[in-house]
Structure formats: C-alpha cells, structure tokens
Length: 378
Image (cartoon, rainbow, N blue to C red):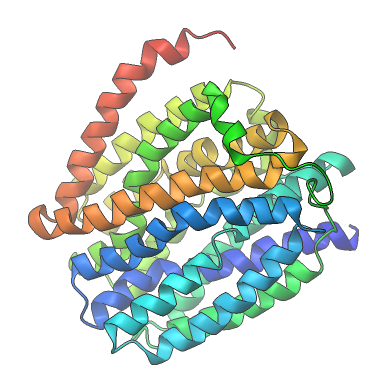
C-alpha cells in the first residue's frame, strides 16, 4: 500500500474516532445542566451558519492549489476551539460561540475528504468503500474509548476531542496532492448544480431523512440516559447499531451499481421511517439495538451512494463544491430543523414523541414517492 492511500485510511480512521467521541456530547450538555431547547440551539446555530459557509468551503477547495490545504487549516482552528470549550462549560453564551466556530471549521472535513478520496481512488483503480470503512471502525472505537474512559463523568470530553483533531490534521497533511480543478482556471458557479433536477430531487429526499437523523444525533444519548442506561451501555448500543456498516462498506462499491441512486434512497427512506417509529417504543437495550439496525441504510442511501454519484455525475471543477452543497442541505439545513425545532418539540411531547411522529411522516413520504421512483427509467 502506497503512502498516499495509507494516509486516506489514517485520516478517516482518526477523524471519525473524534466523531465517535461526539456522540456523547448531548449527554455531556445534559450533565452540565442544559435544557433540551439549549441543546437544540447548540446544534442549530452552527447548522444555520453552515448554510452560508459550507458552500464557500467547497468553492475554496476547488479553487485551492491542493484540496487538502483547506482541511488542514480548518481542523487546526477547530482543535483550538475544542480546547477552549472545555474551559467554558459553565458559561452558555461563550460555550455556544466556541462550539459554533468548532463546527464551522470542521464543516468541510468529511465532504472534501470524500472528494479527494473518490478522485484519487478512481484515478488509481482502488475502491472507496474500504477507506470509508476505516471511518466506521474509528467511529466505533471512539464510542468505546469514551464510554469506558469517561464512564463516570464526561468532563474532559472536548480536551480529548481536540487532541484527536490535531492528529487528524497531521493525517490530512499526508493526503495525496489532489488539485483544485478551478485553481488558475475559469470559475464555475455553484448555482450550476441546481440546474440539474436529479440533484434537486436527491437534496429533497435527503433533507427529509436527515432532519430526523439530526434530531437523533442531537438527543439519542440523552434519551438513553433518560431511560436509565449508563455511558457504557450507551456506547455498546451505538457500536452494535452501526456494526452492519462494516460488511456493507466492503461491498458498497459493487452494490451501488445494482440500482439507480433514487431507488437506493427510497429504500433508505422506508427503513429509517420504521427505525424511528420503533425507537419511540423501545425501552430496553436489546429492543433499542434491534430498532437501530436500519442505521446502515442512512450511511448507504444518504451518504455513501450519493458521494459516489456526485463524484461521477458532476464535472471535476465542481467536485468539492457538489459534496459540500449536499452536506449543507443534509447536515446544515436539516440540522436546524432536526435539532432546534426537534429540541422545542421534545420539551413539549418528549423525545420519544418526536421519534414517533417524525417516523410516521417519513412513512407517508415513502408511500407517496413509491410509484414515481420505482416506475422511473434508470
């Protein structure tokens, strides 16, 4: 394995380990006395800013001499914000500010990393799935580490996360030198993406599912805490729920070719609707694990397959921009709706109520889109 390919494995493994740590953030916020609405605001404010900033990261990566330069710079700034957050846990306004900056400077870490990986693997005749698999393993390792290391108290969570971000920046430095294809060339407007009806349709479906997924990410660990489950049990449930991602990512590149992108997205829509409804009824660790098994189709249908599609369907000049625009809608706009509005609703009807009604809404959408999607030509 050459050093550039190894660096991609290393980057995904280390960076996603940090994302695994952050699954405990909602529980950490609850432990320091924040309400559901305040937790939702911590998720929603960065997401609102991301609507405007994330496409700029994409354009910047496409116009940079090398795409990885934007990743290195952003993650280094984010690491400083993580270290600062640990000292500001008792000051809500200041904490909100540094966490917003942390989010802004890591917005592009995954989509630009995907753009680099997909272009490099296509050029070298390699598969993207095993590289992304390293991220899944890193994510699970991160959950397990924090669940055991901070089993009694989550104090120190952001300090550990900051250290992992520094290691991620080092891995990004070793990435292959994939050029920004608008560097020194004619500029291509981001609005060119929205002239493609397929892209718009993808964004709409992804937005609906990711709205619920972002609510899940913002409140899941807190929800398990309310059900009386410990940090260690929370970590174990989360690890087992995404275990199916491992075999999927080994064959994901081949599966992508079996069905058109919209049919894969519809399958993900239906299974995740059932998942959220099931979560509203689950009360034991085993029941929760069973209801979370469709998580693999969140990765498959709304992250992995769309990333491949955008890398092949879009011109190279918009490779980084396309990935970031997709991320803006699915993790920016959807996060506002899922985290902020979801937090307000959770205070009114409970977290389980939001899971139930959100899942039912997705079931209605899956029924309404069945015939248009499955009857469409490839």
